[in-house]
Image 1 (tube, rainbow, N blue to C red):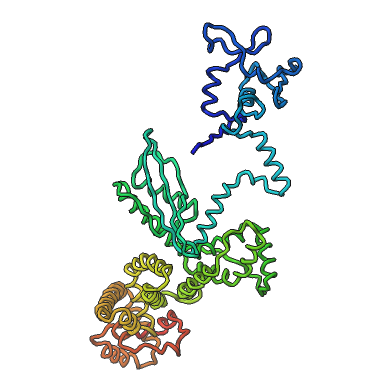
Image 2 (cartoon, rainbow, N blue to C red):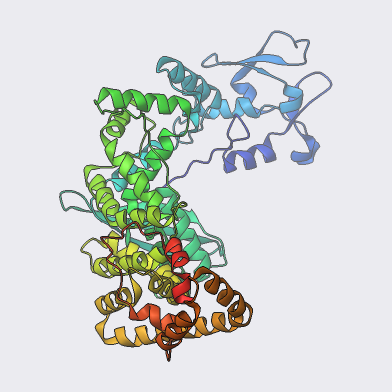
Length: 529
């Protein structure tokens, strides 16, 4: 297969053979009489000889004031204005080789790209078709078509890759995509064939493959990558797996398309106004003038809010894709269904975040139950039929287990100090998760609480006993001080204030759903010291 090379720095586009021939045989200089002859350094016996181009070209008129000459082809009358003393006759020689009317010429055998003609054609196309000036920077059309085909493949895509070196020790890499279309027909398309210089380590190969996959937007559609048994590929697959799994953790293509759609709408004021028009066109009632909101990808509750709003406006986004050609990321019906599934999954996180983010009421006592709900929710969905949900659970579990291990004890203690929960709450939660370990976990928390209570009791006993006794005595009716001391001593015999608190049954949660925990402990400070 013949390859034509374009030299982007020269309008005349020389092939390698042309340059070698012309440099050796056709370097002209101007003699004293104004004739243009071949350079003496390139002739035999230092005899001057005229360039062969003058068999096919003639000078028209005299030398112009700027030192140039007008010349024309004797066969097709193609005119040129050349500075022969500076540029020589290379331009005329190239014309002679491609001119169809020049004797001995074989047009088409060595095609060159005439940049002047190319620019003229591009200018006409831009003007006639009202194209953007950026049209000349657009990627190759066939690549764009294949990208569209691959993006619409209903399933995953498998890849094969090969790496080899030429005799020049240069490396080359080829990546081929294999996929089934909607009719079940197998296709194989080369998506990259490129130079790949050493070193060919596992890490460098993995990075190059990820670069190609990202360029094509296929990093989330990869199913398998088949390689040969080279040693470097053993290390490569480790790097590549890690990177591909990292991309899968972004909750799949459905969420990414929805997120990209929100970014597109919010990219400019003009686009937001166009979107508002689309909302009105499809008849969505938006009385509160609420628009799309972009999430923070590390905060699940914000992702839930983004999905809720986007799903509400999905018809408007579909209309936007019909009227705005640059909007390319409108989700399909299947992807909207996936987005709704993810939204449903994230609902408990949004609800919990709102609950524990309150600023006008204590929230520490609420954490344990809410975190337990997340633990139960993750366990329930770990075996989901939806692969994307399973991937989300895996990613969440890594962080959740860390937080649970680090903070579960203190969260449990705070829950016990809520008079509506106490140890009954822990018993219920622990037993639901794992009945076989429930008692051991509760005993562990009880010991932690007793140890913590001991530290507080030791630090406060010496400084508060006298003051508390004086305060209590002043608050009792006259003559009741001795009686109060008697019953307090007997009631607390062998029991700490913590024991007394824990011995009482939990308060009815439904009757005291709005209980202020801080006020409860303030009102009962005389009972529990």
